[in-house]
Length: 491
Image (tube, rainbow, N blue to C red; front, side, top):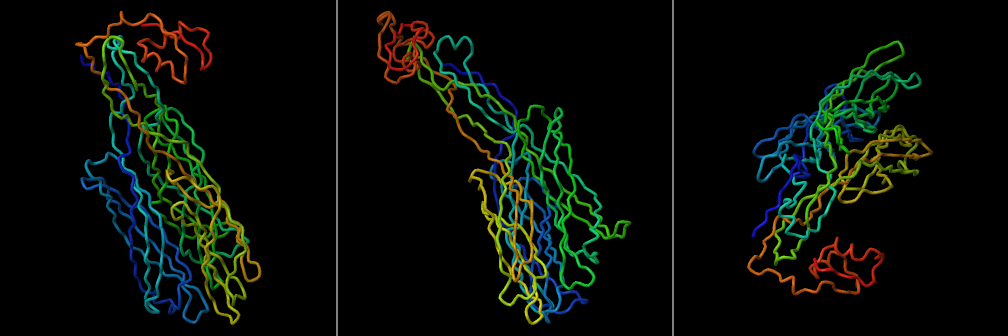
């Protein structure tokens, strides 16, 4: 006799592929006619903007734009000027087998290298990391149990396991328009050289199926000011609040990332001083998970006849709440042996796998009056996420850089957000084959068997002596610990 267990299913999203690709983008450009000849490159500020994405039979096609702003020391080493290079590129993430229903992508600059080809021509090599999460809708098994009629023929070991599957995957595009006023004690900007935006996502709450996301937009601006031959840097922050409809009310945790798609800025005079008008376009990508209890049998036997079990592997998606760790560094670093005056420090964050560093470009004046540059890398220390963690964002919390003699005292804090998720499997019974031709002669079995427990579970004892867990518990109401003598009744 063949028994087929009944399956209960739920519609979920399954992560069908998580991949990270690297793209090398080569940018070239000429120095504007109004600029002097370039002597060397002092620093490169590089942004990558997500412009488009498309799912097709080949996989996920990502369109993006790399913007590199080069701070260059003039050939006579008496000033710093900027050259902006941009280039669009495409990356294709191959998907073997089936086309996914949704794709999420995240971009970051891994490494940049600039070259002065000649005093009027520059080039930049930018290595871009393209991370892709591809999702497929499917029916997942949440119960796999025999019918009430078939259950009477079996003694089954019922197991309940926790799973945290994705119940909703989606994104929301939005725009933030903000106006910032430069502090009166700061030199007034004459021209914006470049701006970099980052999102620090924090508090979340839910109203029904809607997720309310709060956080902060962080904007770092590099600008020219009257009377300065080197660029100045200033940071602005603005609150962020967005509502995303999840389509489900029972989400227990959400994975959130925010990618900038375009950034516009302009200077204007205002009553309080010079203001910076900005318009930031971004996409908020969300994966929302629910908690499920998977019910199944992991073992079974019959007291009536021999039994052979059929099994399969059930996938149990796992996920933890999003976590944040603070990484720090406090150190005095040197600028250069011939440093007479430190002019400015341009900071950036970089990550190689799980290691995070502060990349510091120092502009200083030498003892003979020339402007020079030096690059320093300062590792940030703190808790490191495990290999199974997905890095969600990396943003500055504090970046205090104070000139001290011929060096810089650095007191730095960065926030690293990550989440751990993955899958584990559970071997579950899908059915059973009962051998009706060779029934067990229960009349030949003793009515009771007295055994000395030697580390076996009640389930194992019941199976060995053709009994049941309920019958053993009923026959031994005072049994409290292993090592006792037990009466095993025949079922």
